[in-house]
Image (cartoon, rainbow, N blue to C red; front, side):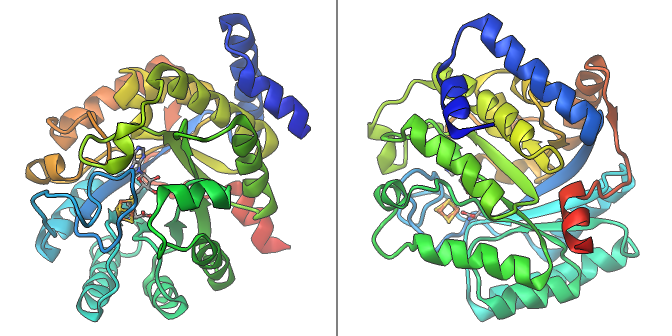
Length: 344
Ligand code: SAH
Ligand code: SF4
């Protein structure tokens, strides 16, 4: 697909065109990554963050009750995931770089590997770290890393972050992760204030030029505690735009993993199913203990904050089956793109 074609699709909004696009993307998905959905149970292990991204509800300067799960709590979540045949976990948190925290994560990775005899795949989403820290975590058994670039436009990136947050460092981190041998995931927020359609076209090109293995992207949703929320956005438009971005990314990069993110469900109760229909193949059920969820509100109205993990699982299972898809229980569901890339 040319940039011009991507641009034109991103501007189309009538339901017949959208239907055509989603069907085209679904056909690519069916042929290449098939109709199997893989689960990554996400543990939001801490909302303590050293950074101050203007859009985020757990940025350093907001007043929110700060928590960090104990190792025991994290391992209980991991046991839950393992017992329910989730193939993988995602450990996500605000960004911290102090030695005590790095050691805490080291030990946590080791113990999750031990409790599952190496069977649970571990994806990390713990922000920007040094090469050595990424390497250490990889050597201990984490094999996938999610670090969104947020936007591939440096100018827009600068508008969304304080001056000491570096776009170039974020890119360097993606390079380091790849050199070390991780499956590398990135993504963007869609429908940000001042974001242009051209920026989104460039985002898709960025994914392909950086030979990314996994994508997690979703609509930008204002969070009332964050400074960017004073700039209004059209959430209905953001939702559709996010689905179109998923479909177009699937067409441009047929063999990568694409997540149906929770932010989509925050805007539409069937958001994640619609994303699966538009080409996504990964779901990230939230398995964070109930009592912490309200304090991990990156954006307004995060769904499932009141549901227990098992209820979430039951409702997910029936929703997926109703789409005619199966769940890849007890499998890592690695990115086919990564497998091909590592054989080169
Ligand atoms: N601290 C880590 C991981 C947690 S934040 C990091 O920043 O990489 C995970 C993602 O949440 C961010 O990458 C961002 O894309 C998303 N996010 C934060 N605030 C958001 C908002 N208001 N709307 C939509 N997504 C948001
Ligand atoms: Fe911290 Fe990540 Fe939120 Fe930025 S997006 S403030 S790094 S949790």
